[in-house]
Image (tube, rainbow, N blue to C red; front, side, top):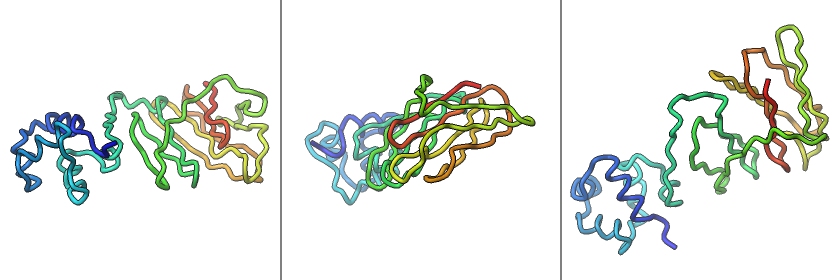
Length: 194
């Protein structure tokens, strides 16, 4: 299995409106070398990957996966936020569009929001003094917990970190219609529309 696909190199080169010769000149290689890469008859040397990624305007990680995911959501509606959570350190990556993200050497997968909750993940939203008070009856121990609660509206996202061995709750100033969601480290994302 190759770490870089020729099809990806060709697609990105054409997207940048470069000929094989122009790409070769930028990388100080021959155009025959570029042709070999694009026809999968050869692979770029590992030492040139960083420069290749820079010229093609892609991350080195995307070159390694052989996939290029572009953000097609030009409206930038924050309610369409994508969440990627590292299963090792708990780092949260948010993005308006899909992408390839890595943390702790692991490829992160997008967390889909489930709007059908069970009793343990039932999101209770109360309105108090122009704020939403959000609570969840989820046990919080060091192995099984709610990592964060977020409030998404069309133009804003507010994320509140939750910690093991503390009550699951958060206050959000009401900013309009949106989604309140949470992430359980064992069961994934749950949400409710507000």
